[in-house]
Image 1: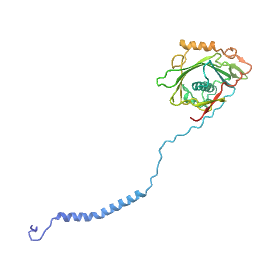
Image 2: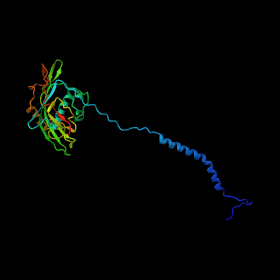
Image 3: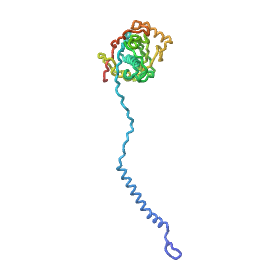
Image 4: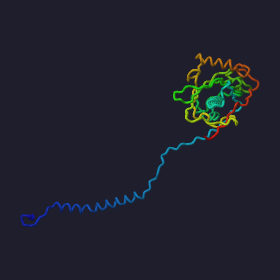
Length: 283
């Protein structure tokens, strides 16, 4: 193979390899600096500690409900034969009836039983308007029976006649008979939302004046009527018949005082009946 020469006979070589070599020589310092920088960065990444930030939302545990007793008023419950006032659904109905009364008197959640503010089926607010009373309320349960439920959950309708005629409103140094001088019906639809979890067991031998646990837990409350889940209305024939029954079949306990009668002495708050059994912890 002939060696390339120029016209003067001098041996020549291709300028491309020589040019590439010169470029490479010029790039070596820059490559060395880049390599050193990467080495430092690599070493720094190995020793740098990243601060861990816990973004898990914090759920504050609400304070335990401390019931504040309502003085000078009590609730006594009776029922027609065959109705157990300590059955789970009756405990819910009783807790609702008493809490609703105490809330009307004080306008404060602290006077209601634990869970009432979340279970009540109509809007309420703390520090609400009040209707003070003193004396004894007599509630008489006239029906407690199972209701059909589309999801197969235990569901019941409980009806009781609420007689507040044994209460009076303080007016200065005297007392005026309550607005409710005759019995009125209260109809509740009560459904076990935690249907696969049995209601807690209770000890019937030990009684207190208020339930020491959240009776409403695992239950749903709705205002009902004699036929359907709706607000009670005396304009309906079925509801009117129920109203008449409470008026006639369960007469007021105060001797049929008229509304607005002035009393010389306040009505007496009789001991609450039957009281509240104790919850039995454990399976």
